[in-house]
Image (tube, rainbow, N blue to C red):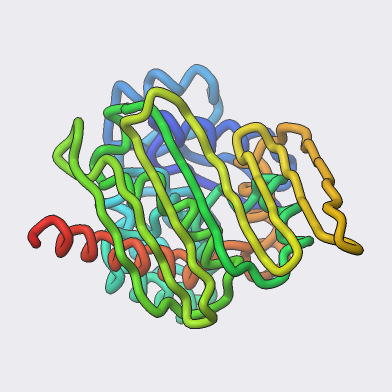
Length: 309
């Protein structure tokens, strides 16, 4: 196909970055910016003088080929459904939807209408994660920590859907096994929803993942530690560092890798446009988004049970 015409729906903190990345690409045309907040649109309009502005996402559907949906999670389902029903390709920010049933319906609509549905789990495009995949075989134990200071933005959902969902998605993409059981605990601290949570996920292949997320920390941290037979991986996703320790001839061999800080969002959006042009499956599919939200639901349910006992 020729130039891909794109609209960004939701141009708040993250949406404006989506707009900038599309605007920088030669093989797509940023046709429109859509937000139901008129002042937000006017604030960003100076950066994109030739781009259409609208508060109504319904009005431009016939003019575009694809959309980035960067709105609050509760609105994902309704907006994505509208475009998928019309055969438009969708890059949908994480988490895919608020419920499993909604996610399942979006996947069905994408399949029925030959539309690409890519979920914005941006950490999959982190160079450290991509490099780790090349060395990973069959992990037996995984530990993840994702900590962040409190910000009002994102508190429309729990920390599980806000932050932990990243690590859930990475872990599910690595383990390749069904979940056997989940034990979790968590609590509200500064918001009306869960702000700190820990989950122990046991898979049917006996791999165990210990996952912690907090949005009430005094520092930011995104770390993964993975253990498999004769190897230990330590990944700092913020600093783009990866250390691999292996046993060879009863000696420990250490390898250290530091990756240039790349623009993961640009990589993600470039990949989305590439999938549209080549009619190929995205790295993070709707099914991946569904598995992540389903696991997040199980973690939330386990916390609720734990807190009522």
